[in-house]
Image: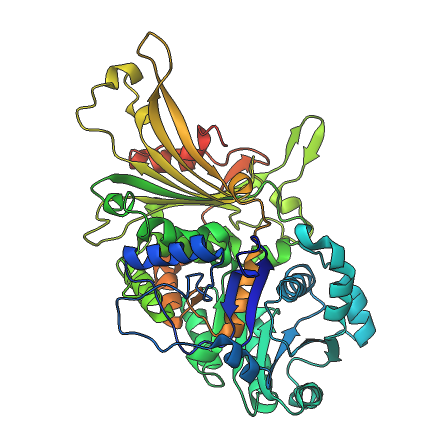
Length: 573
């Protein structure tokens, strides 16, 4: 069994300590089932100074109250895994996503000893390149962890020597057959596992999957395919794509990636809720007044308007990134941390949601603006955007979950480009304190006294809780303060990129952070009717200046449900 680990020494009495461990081939899982079992794990950390973790990030040395799992001798498992190899083929290797995200993420995993001992990386695209040209191209984008810089050059060279290139057409079985021959040359004498990452436009997904499945699948091990969004434009096109993929692959072979699910604060969401007694009892309509999911970028399309104009902000951000976060936030406690149990609960949330109505949506588009002597372009000034385009670059929506836990609680989404700041966060606004003894100190605006939990996904990852506090002094003056966990201060180590976590999970076969087909169907069912209405009626988006806080209509939408956007008054804005 290949493992991912880092070591440090805690003194003469402790062994070299493993502080990060992820299995790459996992058949046995041990889940924490109770607080006592977690305490047992913490005692091991205190005594020995190390903690072994599964790919779900949970200690392997905890005791489960469920049926006892067999003891795993990881040293023997690792020896057995030496006879296997993983071949990772990046299809669309000459594209921006591959160069800026996928290859650097693979190198980061290699740098942290998280890839198997035997692995090979192949780039595949139509561009004519040699192996050396590919290495030169991706070598410019590789970086090393700050705390291990001393062996950076050696690690880069070792990684690049495992990278190869094959040029071919995406619809040619002959070209993929030649790729298969090259893969077999590298895999000789070992059990071969193959991972294909489709970093290509969705209109050629099916051609690549057809060719790869027929001529380049592993003859002895597993074959998996990572598919990048967008997964269609609506329910119909998404369903057609899924059916076409399943003509050549099983559902278990398809890994639909949403990189936001790999972000540290999103993955921490279930830990925050389910492992802290202080939060779980409050996680319902009884105490939560509204939930806000906010995404903003401080730049426009900047030459990518041709792609963006075909999808718009609702399809690009809200229907996938924000809706997936909402499902994780609102789901019931899963039976276990198994991927299928978690995804089952997410699907229940999505199926309990009301179909989005046009009255609960506001769309906008940024216009040209001059600020500080600098001219900022309008969306339609982008030469790749069709003139007169009505594609929204901003959207706000109010969604509702019709179940016992969340009945009547508005979930407000807001996403936009060319706004005044870059952020992605979840804001949970709690209800007012009934019969608040100190309400006169806040005047008539009780929102100033509202407790608020903020989970900042990016940038400057943080979790903070807004509370009311007395200002020191002889008078009774109250102040809103924040109990603040800044990740950069508490955890100085560099946070891994989301693509690193998701690539490693795909290699492991861990599916909990990937989207299942019924999840995708339920997500599109919510948004397809309103998207069709917006386009059929050619509803013009409200214009807002580049670099502003967005269209005024978003504030009216929030006020309709007696909500004030939390990011507008936050000291962390």
